[in-house]
Length: 141
Image (cartoon, rainbow, N blue to C red; front, side, top):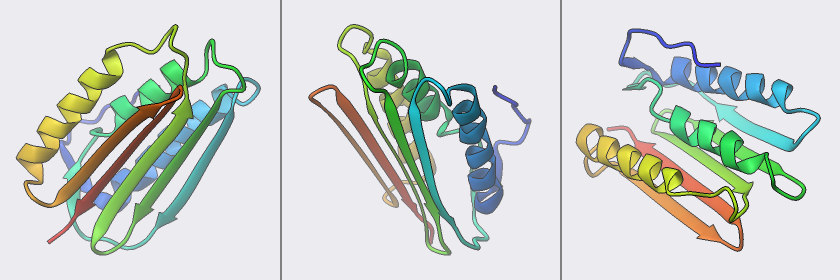
């Protein structure tokens, strides 16, 4: 489901729309297996963001949030305004299939954010009672 482009930076609006399309493709594919919700509020923005940076978080949500999970549910929230980009994903998972990959993905994204958006981002992760939550916010100057 990944359609890579050769650009490393895209306008934030284009990236947000790309992410919505990407999530909706997964949503259609898993429609009979899981409850998947995508909430968006995409406004105008003239800044560039790193292309594909959030895809590992999205892929992990489907990898660990659909299979071997009782009543699988994945909630995405994507908001873009003139000052910031906010993305969150929240899903149930199972100890049987949850592994270190989510921590590695988180650490790689954290490192990328620190190099690309030093001092202008927030990244939060929580795993409790088989529920995984990641929130990312980038503030534009």
